[in-house]
Image (tube, rainbow, N blue to C red; front, top):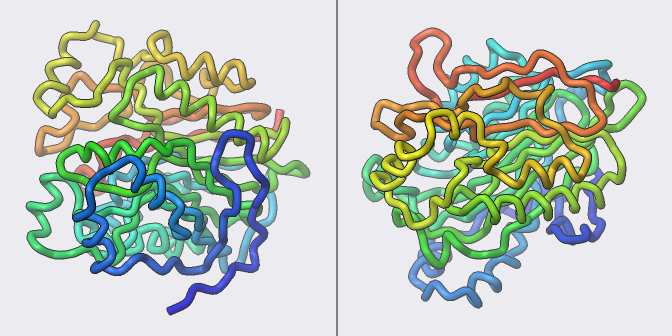
Length: 371
């Protein structure tokens, strides 16, 4: 079924160092077929081939759907960011969001047509429940059902679409949607962790909304997890240069999983990772700013984080299967420029009634207005 172009305007300027150039807006992405994805999975994992695949049209697309009855403006908005860890539990996620009721929801690790999340379009499901519109961009075309645990859970079930990425969901009018792709390394294609062979790289979804009489920029961001502090700082520099090209001097709120572990994770298996964490000073993971140069990069670009985050509060959540065991890190952050931020909050990633874990990341929330 061919996709139709959205009537919403999309930013198509050439960002200085990022990847919104020639972005396309569509109302429904058409994923590569299972057969095509299987062919890609079988190919040699060369960097040159990934460079070719990274130019797939679907990796330049944004799926954009306006809210049914879009709100136009407000004097202040409550914004939440959540790495929903594939959004495996849509009903529980909806119940948790109903207790928070953000005006703008910034999301990372959202599945579309993945067996591990029951083949659902998780972004659309959340938007429909909230009478909201959304912007969704692909971080990875997934060539497997996921990591070792995912593959064991789904057996031989193939992914219907195999799409995974970031999104912005809001009942407010979202304009000038853009995709910023700041990672072309092909790390997950060349060296798939836990067997997850993927096409793509870390990225951000960006949009504009009206706050009072002024336009503000919001961004949902995911930095690389299997990396080190220097690489995260490099990704942040590219991201912020691109946002400045998108909206020069505008007020901005970034919500993201910045993966501020303070050490290099690449090549560490789960056991080695947990051992490395235990070797660090007790509060380093929950207070990572001195060890992560990306914060200095953000400061140079005019961003601050002290008013919009809970100081020292970890945002990792231990799960029943032992994933993300203590000590827990502060990985999820807001970065703000030109905005007044109040009432920062860490929201437990649990079902409000049953207490069941919904993600390995807590949700974070903040209220922003113009100063």
